[in-house]
Length: 519
Image (cartoon, rainbow, N blue to C red; front, side):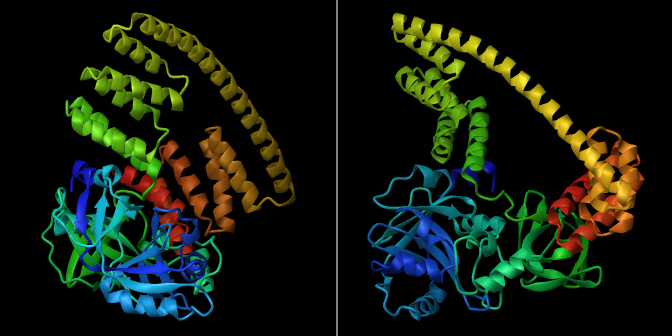
């Protein structure tokens, strides 16, 4: 699936899902205590993925929970309807809550299609890590932008979206699946199974967790749900695969020690040996409205430069729906409309730009040009004057920003000197103190005294061979010293240590540096 088609998105009927209506005045309070997700924080017209757990933290079911003014909905796989309904009804005693199966068709929309669609009532949510909507109808109808099953599966696959008895089941803790990121709030208060899953989450996390193994341009055809080996030990379980360009991506549940972004693995599956690279899920990034807005904007600019301006306008409209404060998107929309002689509309978008960025010079400049084209000479001259004033204000602001940056740098240097003095005092009492030696190494790296970093970190690792960040800092210093072979050794050792510790952030950083060196 290309970037353009993924952002455009489409529609499809959720054939394998059913709807439960949740009624009664106590429904939100009751469900808040029964589900893993913070459903009370949802506004009317919003939805989220949620789960129901056993008291031991194992999965009972997962579903979309959406809120409306009069009653709420649960959208759940058909095979999980009865167990979901009966399990949630077990604790209804004095509460005004009623759960009923509803005969409704579920329309799902994703991407730009979801953002720009209009329905009498729809529910916004994260669908496959993209902007999504669910809407309900008595009868199904023909869709204008229908996604094929293969396209739907591509969205699901590259987000590792949960699918019952495929990559999630009732033998698992929620921690073992992407539901741990998509369907649980550890801050909302009590829910069934909370103590167990919070303990796992706060310790080292899941031993096995979904991600991808990328293998380059090979013939690949194996049955699903097979275990595979890495270094003669269990590496994880293979679920399925898809081809993207010349590469094949395997959806796997991978053991913690191998689960480092960019790590190269030799693994054995079904009697055959492959070489793969670890890629984190979701493949296209976790859903974040501001980040998705930028992605839509960047593609829109690319289309604009290719003279595909109508398509660009759609993506820009989607961009500002995701982030109403995105000044650059308003500016480009106004420019495109001006190029099409739609000057009044262009002026409206320049006014929106000024609402979010009152300092914008280009908003006044473009307004002046468009007003001139409309024959409104006096108004055009007034906007031109405002542009001139804003230009001088901008120069003043830039000078002030430079002064602030200099002051901040001086304050930072003073703080470093204070910390350095404190660390040196500690070393006078204990020359092997790991925190003080690491602190001095960090300061030395900031000052580009890389040989000093090596001296201090050697002491740290002698005292604490499991200090993950020490390997990262030492490796970076060795790279600067052009000691690349030694840096490779340190990064490889550091990745091994960090993976065993469950310290994936330094492990990922070291793997990225290691890949650069080996290239």
